[in-house]
Amino acid sequence: MRGFLVLSSLLAGLMLPSPGSAAGKVTTFTLRNGMDAVVIEDHRAPVVTHMVWYRVGAADEVPGKSGIAHFLEHLMFKGTRKLKPGEFSEIVAANGGSENAFTSFDYTGYFQRVAADRLGLMMSLESDRMRNIVITEEDVRTEREVVLEERNSRTGNNPGALFSEQRNAALYLNHPYSVPIIGWQHEIEQLNREDALAFYKTYYAPNNAILIVAGDVDPNEVKKLANRYYGPIRPSRNLPERIRPTEPPHLAARRLQFADERVSRPYVVRTYLAPERNAGDQKQAAAIQMLAEDLGGGGITSVMGRQLQLEQKVAINSSAFYDGLSLDQSSFGVFIAPVEGVGLQEAEDAMDGVIADFMKSGIDSEQLARIKNQIKAAQIFALDDLQGLARRYGEALTSGLTVEDVQAWPDVLASVTEADILAAAELIFHRENSVTGWLMRAQEADQ
Image (tube, rainbow, N blue to C red; front, side, top):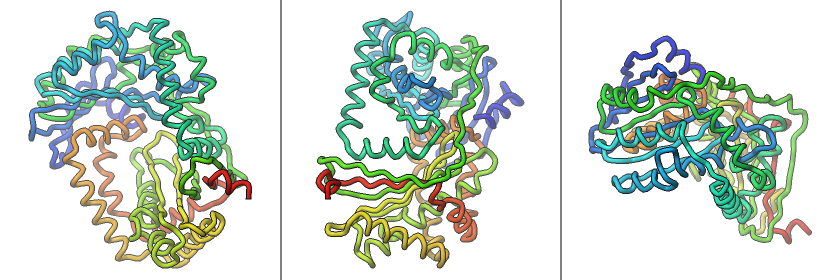
């Protein structure tokens, strides 16, 4: 979030109204201790979403301590110096609210959704656990078992999730995006109280956090409450700079096969390294996003869907996908699930043939216009999801973008040309930057 920090340092303490949407205007400010804030006004209902995002995630972990960011997220719901274990959640529920938390590669976030007049209470609770959590050895033992069970249920018992984990580990040769967010099981088993407290003391600080408040609120009142509850918290003086290992040049394509008797539908996925969205310069990422939409983002109306599912009838499903919201280099993927009787090699060859034809024939201008209209409509409908809108800002700001970048994104997408999309395809489709994976039934691997 370097770009937002530059803006904040120049305008600390000032209210900055930004061009709004149907959901209301967006205002930003920064507290004296370095905590950034975004306020999204929406007065249609007397509710508010209160979020605190930390600029730290799984990709910031010390090697050998995978899963510590997510593990700490669990421990944050234990007690503080003021609250007994579980009391935080009890207070939220007693006030008619809901809450949750989430960990990704680049961020960790906590939120509550409550009546607007309970905002101050939520800030008092969240600011308390920013610095004052209490972790016992018993907390560590019980939550470590919870996390291990979570990994077992979501990943260990899901062949598709295991397959995805292996492909991701193969795609990134040096960058920590290769390590699963939840952590490797053998490392989770070794996480301890000292690991959790060290991570907490290092990264959980106001100058490493973003406050996002969305709903029936007045920005000036939000600022007063933020100054009251978050303002007194001292900033960290030893916050590490967010520098991560980078990828070396990839010199060879990688392939893997993952067989499991629980697989019901075999499929092929290929992922390529791809640039992320960057502050002030989102045009390339927008072109890659439009490439994914045109090639395989619209079901049977996409290029892949039309040719592989309707014309050649070799696939029951196909897609292309890209998510540029990451602090570092992202990925672009293509997918095909063949119909019964079509082997994975035949399916992969058919998918590659469609991509090759796409590169030669270019973009259908009418199809591109339809995609742009669909994206525009989706963005309008998304304004009704206030929590989703707040999350959009949080994800972007913790991934290095600015408020201005978030607001400019629809226009950047709309400006993408056919030539831009073909240039993006030329950039992406290099086999040496890819991993191709086959997910298959166990008996098929023996044939």
